[in-house]
Length: 423
Picture 1 (cartoon, helix red, strand yellow):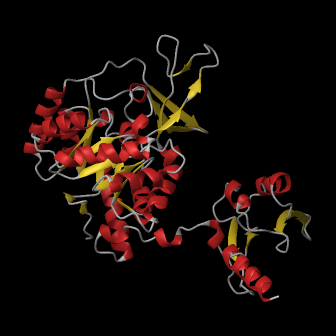
Picture 2 (cartoon, rainbow, N blue to C red; picture 1 turned 90 degrees about the vertical axis):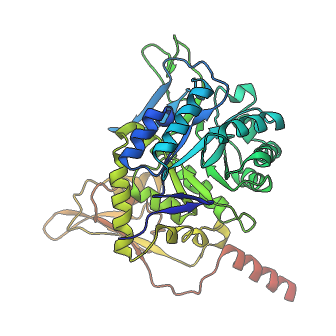
Picture 3 (cartoon, one colour; picture 1 turned 30 degrees about the vertical axis):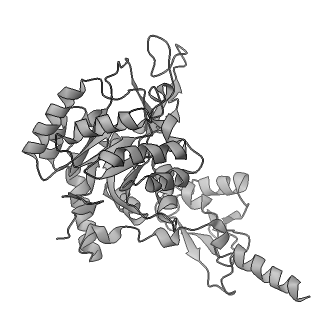
């Protein structure tokens, strides 16, 4: 059986699955139940000066019959006294010494504030710190969270302040509410971070009740922007992880967060450079017991691939993630319809005719039956027909034999430049 333990920035965990800092890690009772279920670690809900929270505070985005395709919250950091949290962290770590407890921290970007809270919390024996520089709502209006995380200089300083007194690894959690997350990731590294985690939640409004006209969620009729997470944000998070991982001047581990719901998502994040993953929404949707499927699925996948350790996955797809200008312009693929499987719903024809390249013909065979066929000379291989097709195996995307040598846009421009200079 494959080894699914990890060593993330010097923090050993029996598996790559940590609960993200959020409502599931709000109390010792919850974290201990999670550890009993099999979770490898937990990032304790952010410690700060206790706040007042509101009701209601969660909103779900349901799409086409799927519950919780996305999730939104306007909940803030822990609303319980720090001393109460610290006592529970101490008791939980004492009971589960082989599991990881990371303390999420948030204060203003001031040296004395970071020194005070880091010293105070590390005394109870946490395995590391995660600096919450990403929460987009409530705390950002008070000069913390993403208000700090959107400024590389403040990310660097906050990380540096925490590192000055931390005796355990420091992970800087980054906000996705920024144009280029690699800028803040590199700032964290300059500040001495042992790792970064990404992504925190995305600024959002989950919906509006069209009967009451109240924003969702609402507090006595009024709403506010919140943090978006869940399966819908996975592509955004995966891109940000990949963008950071492929930077030649970025060298610290990444904890992947954002819509991870199953073991397949875990594999994708690790292939794209994550050294471990954090999960929240899926646990809130289905409970802590999902850890069984997560660990069993991951272990079976590794065994099937003949891979001895999950760590061997880390970053294996990063070199395949590049700029558009490096893609091969001479590669060609086309769609082919399998008429033995096609149910003639015509969704592919409609999509291609209305919104793509008008290359699927409706024909009639010798028996008078209608069928669809792709004109391959006109097909650009955009994938749209296979995406909208409701039947597995009805449309294949097929690579054509390449007749021209690979040539990227960069290759093309370089060749043109050479040609022009020779004239």
